[in-house]
Image (tube, rainbow, N blue to C red; front, top):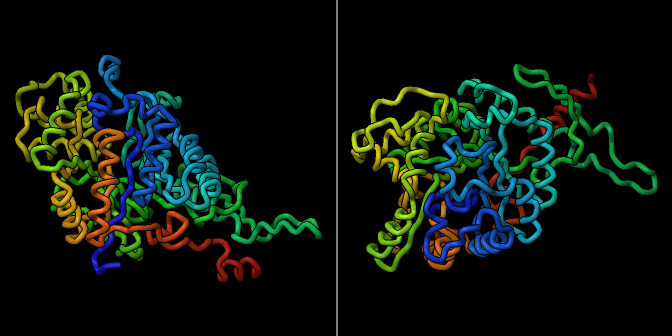
Amino acid sequence: MSGKRQMHLNAFMRPISIHTGAWRYPDAWPDANFSLPKIVELIQHLERGCFDAFFMADHMALLNMPFKSLRRSHTVTSFEPFTLLSALSMVTKHIGLAATASTTYDAPYHIARRFASLDHISNGRAAWNIVTTSNPDAAKNFGMTEIMEHDKRYQRAREFYDVVTGLWDSWADDAIIRDVESGIYSDPDKIHVLDHHGEFLNVRGPLNIARPVQGWPVIVQAGASNAGRQLAAETAEVIFTSQRTLADGKEYYADVKGRAAAIGRDPDLIKIMPSTMVILGDTLDEAREKRRVLDSGVHEDSCISSLSIALGVDASKFDLDGPLPEIPETEQGQTSRVNAIKLAQRENLTVRQLAQRLGGHAGLNFIGTVESVADGMEEWISERGCDGFTIQFPWVPGGLVEFIDKLIPELQRRGVFRKQYAGTTLRENLGLPRPENRFFTEQALAQRVAE
């Protein structure tokens, strides 16, 4: 292994490509979001490329845009994450399986049980992406007329995290005995009743499944607002971010890791992995032409709606050929809103130009030859703008296969990416320790005996 910093790679796979024009690209799979055989083929490619994890975003409603716009989207149908990842665990051995689950519209007991089950089924490869869910239509699908206020969602999420991890710890690692001769299956002294009563949640416990293989599935979080950054610093082991420039990446990296250090966490045990789209060509011009063809598949119907979602306001009422007007604060996710405004200001884009960019892909891009893209990714790692990348493929299968077959060997040649998996669990491959069970440490057991 070289002395260079090693990068980690997650694959953002729900939707299979975030780019609105991906399904229309020449030779792309238009049905990739909803075809199990195709998804199996893709994840097996990723595993051959030694990717850390297959990462699934999720939505609790259709995107809050008019059906006229949604008719052009390839993301309106996709599988429920746990169902799909459980199936994929049966056709893979090493790659991590990361699912999004909402702390606003689900119950901690459900989340704890599902992720513990996935971790056992996959032999220790599960990860939980904690989201608070900002789509106002999601609230209406769960009996609420209004979305919960932004900071309150994060306060609930923090308590939710404590409950879920407490439920994972409700069984000692050696609580299951299975002594056939004595007839003792489990030791009741090694089962903890959580009995949580908090501001938002009341949960008795214990969980009705053994402690996960990894102790806890890996915790993933995407925090951009002040509340989000703090939650990430307190809880996350992998952070999914969206900085577009190295300067912004370095600022975020230093801020969140500084917050973590201030509360006693080891910053090196937090992996910051910004979303990144990579388009490769034998020349820069060829790569740019691929991007042009890709963007040409984006229709105005969907791109104006995408801008409206990002900003949390109806962008169709703006002068499309004028500059972006001042945007008021909304309960929309702050990451998308702030990033859209900064992009428009940085590149002096009209509303129409900004919409077209967001309708395709407006995040961090590496577009060029294998060598130039590897240079850019290596710079982000060496300059501590990130610890790796969450790759959003421009289209599938071609964009994904090119990444695996062309870019991965170059990163390996440079000594910045693994040639084989380090261990059998996702934690081992990310270099993360297995969490100690808070209820069954020597100190906790001694206190229990004393009581």
